[in-house]
Amino acid sequence: CNVVIARFDTRHNSGTTVTIQKTDDNILRERIDARKILWQPETETWLLQDFKIRRFDQGGNETASAIITDSLLTLNLRPEDVTKTSLDPETMRFSKLAEFIARLRESGNDPRKWRVNLHYKIAFSFTNFIVILFGIPLAAVKEREGISFGAGMSLLVIFVYYGFIKFGQVMGYKGILSPVLAVWIGNIVFLGCGAYLLYKIRQ
Image (tube, rainbow, N blue to C red):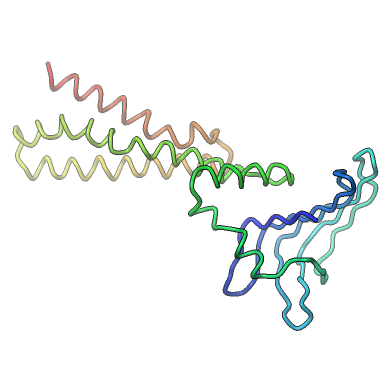
């Protein structure tokens, strides 16, 4: 039995976006997709809420399906097992997050949000370079216009740059932009602007 829980709350021993797969000789025979799962310590079972159960034949064809509000389920899994083997995707390193995305894909879940976050980890590493690229022409502005003006421009650039990044992430989460473009759009725009300003300052 393969259990994937996208997010697990250790305080309440509950999880959201749950997929449970039962296989027979590596052939998927049953799949459960639940909105929420909650540990019941009295009976040592799991309460599934708002879930759909589907069954498949040897050829992988769906033979039956049902939508159920809630039901108790016995799994060879306890809350402490979940906390030992899982991490919050928000804090995962690149390799762990990539593995998490692969598991979501295998279970048929949409990993769009986590793909955006995965590419964001790469794009964010270029932040220092872009800040330096903007810092050179802004330093020249400080000399010409004064420290106050230059400092104000620096804060404005940082604010707008951060806004571009968050805007791109939202577009990626909604599927409007691809995960790669969503997190790189801010870097692309500001890299171009920074290069242009540097060129103008040198003239």
